[in-house]
Length: 554
Image (cartoon, rainbow, N blue to C red; front, side):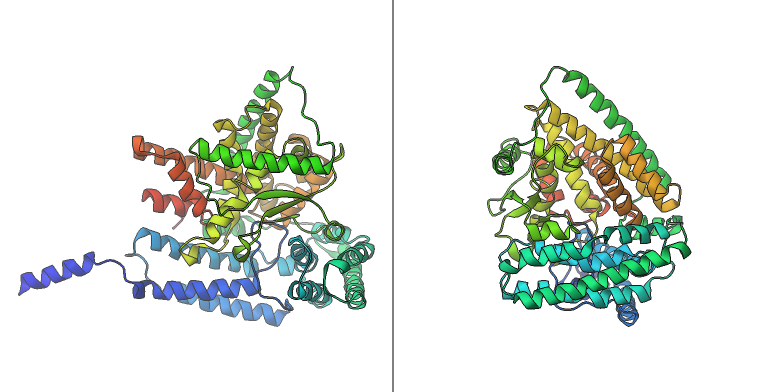
């Protein structure tokens, strides 16, 4: 009898995980992602855009208190689940949801932009509007009403912002006030250009836009009058920054380790750029596209070349159902708003549509990234399109595991985009264009410097103007782009490190996989796994792929 009982226990221990065992996590994930779509704040980044239910949004203190209550309940449900004996893949899902919950705690309490950052409310108003306008026109009745709702929502959100802000840093207030200069004529230009692309009545659109303009001008005056009494300190602080690294991004590094990694990569990038420039002394320089039509045609042809290169060189599987990364002239209404990344990666329900990157007219006065793109569209295609963000997001949105379909944090996403640039350079994509290789190395300089600027701004070792000048001098880059970068890093700590540190994590992951699998290693199989699971922190990916949890923070 004793022997029979022992056999039964062994059989039970070896039994596969049953659906009902993970049901609490699956239900929690479904409830959380639905809730997150309703309440996630807008921001200027393009990767974390998600499909959201329409309607008015509320940033009142009562609404924020309710979100905090909801989050506490989600956290309690998560902590009750014991995933320790689950297969690694399901433990990864469990940690992913824990990280997503920590992201919300970060937004509400650790780095509360709603309380300390006046630019946050530009994000919830004008960025939200700009994001709606990146979806290509014409707009049907439902999209037209949502655009109008977002314009109509601007006064109430700004009123709530003026009540919520508690002694925000003066540099943040100054940046927000400057961003709203001449906002009324910009919105009028938007409304005039937009009207014919919607089903809205012009009088209704213009009246709603006027009310929004009034509210934005009032908000600007409020900020200007507040600036003299506001503190100048912008640093978030070490404890908060470490919370982001360990709890949200699931990175195993300290701020000091990040700085060392960034400095080493910057030196490497400068050296490689110097080698390339010396090699290319007699090579004619790249030319900027002579007109926007030729630029768009060139980009379309080269996107097809990139796809063929990936397949023919056994680098990455590109399914036929994935549509194309395309350039398009920026419509006047989107140009007038100007508070959003000007692209549309599509979304889970729009996978049959092309991705669009809206571009300005080519000229010698283009900023840092636009100038590079106008000379050769491939670097931005590789980072943003295929095999970059657009392609990676499409694969993630079709993941058979619903827990993994949702964006969570850009450490892996941006790491993949940056990794793709250098990987494709080493694979030979840019062998036909020596000066394009210089562009890639200069991009590497920027991404390495972003680590230092991000960390030092968060820890109080850089002020905003110092960070902008540092980027301007060290990349180098134009003043406006350097200032925009510094502002984004100061108000959103942790995002700028994601490119460089994410890439380094992927490179180490690849090296460890290559050594462990030896002759069985397949670059295509490795990349297919990383891209498909690109919404998941790299430390979790390597745990699942290699069975190595050493880089997952405890």
